[in-house]
Image 1 (cartoon, rainbow, N blue to C red):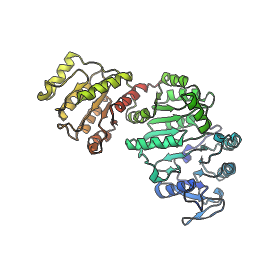
Image 2 (spheres, rainbow, N blue to C red):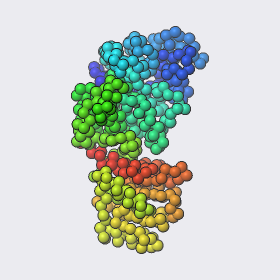
Image 3 (cartoon, helix red, strand yellow):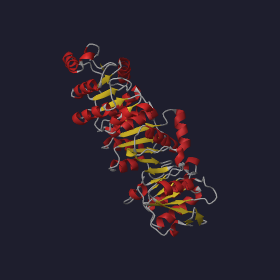
Image 4 (tube, rainbow, N blue to C red):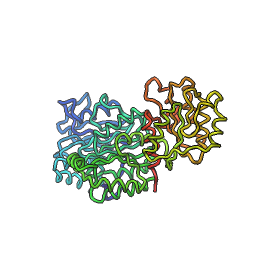
Length: 461
């Protein structure tokens, strides 16, 4: 972690100028070239190429040293041999650079702890922040993208409210693609690799105070001694939802983690129980992480877990009940007076065939007004703290306006709602009304229940 004096993370995460050190004049696919081209063509940042031989690259002057760049450089991306990094970092500090991403591998993860310690010592003495080594670095839209992955090989999320931090670059990219597919935007994604200097705690502090971030998600492989406890305590006190996916849950997983980023995985069972004790949201697997981020980016108020279900299909309602109960959520039966009140206010033609116990099954004959009536009613019941709306767009009586109309009920009552809409491209028009109003949309019943579970697990200290 960073020590010493004041460190300006702004230059590192939202730079106006960067230098990419390690540009190849012979290999277009070199990581440094991929990073330079991507930022030069697609991001807002101004980029300078650096290579110790100098020369010209794509008509631009290649500087032999960072000290030769004629403008102030906010941060550098170092993609060179590991042995060259200490001298390069020293030059960056001398030239007034504000921080660095060290892409280079060949440090502690390969047993070269002494070289990594040397780089850390140089940085700490100058209060010079760097990410890595052995990492992809930072995706900070619209400023920069230090991932050495060609743009056509990755689906990048739009600007949004979720910050994603990962020791593994591959896991980070995988989840970025999944978030993009769900329409969930990122404030920033950071691959920390060996986290030799900047780790999860530093980034938790930063994103806690970042106005562009509402949810902070971590993929964690391990911590240094006593670092895990400090992380959990800070995460529990964080004013924003913190989501954690932990690797190294088994003995073989611990071994894989150690060889990957030189981390100490620790005792998973202890870590998991402490996360729950402090109200930090643990995603048990990758299938929970994405819906957790989506739900918590929309709702920050925790729930107790009492679910009201509205559906146009009895089978879907039954599956939702089973899923809720299996996750420790409750589905309370509505009182007889409540059932009578809903029945009296929905369309006469479905009064005799609908069910009102919870789930409220409006049947395949329901129309927009029936969903609106039932949602309005359940949103005002104190015994219900979250609604699952199982919306089947092939029901003949509903329109593409229904998502927007139901979203307005949330605006009026503040009762969180989660929509389930089958993940079929032709039905996107039904999803837009929810998404435009920041209502999370799940594409499976299990995913919808995961979203509700995230709100229940988020219990700030």
